[in-house]
Length: 86
Image (cartoon, rainbow, N blue to C red):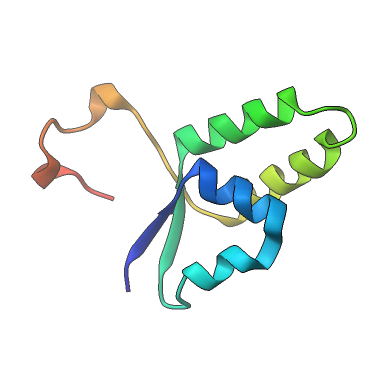
């Protein structure tokens, strides 16, 4: 089992092409999304045209409610990779 951290590019692709992206994730993998990626997706909702905004907002809402979010606080993070904890 491994932690798969979904980035913004992966999530946008999942929104656009649906289930094709799920093949990249094994059933045993733990999946999470970085808080910065959530912020980027929310900006995408705000910048979307009125035609696509409701669908995009629903996708982000679903992702945020169903995928654990890894917080990002640069000032409180350890400075060495060996001391990072997820």
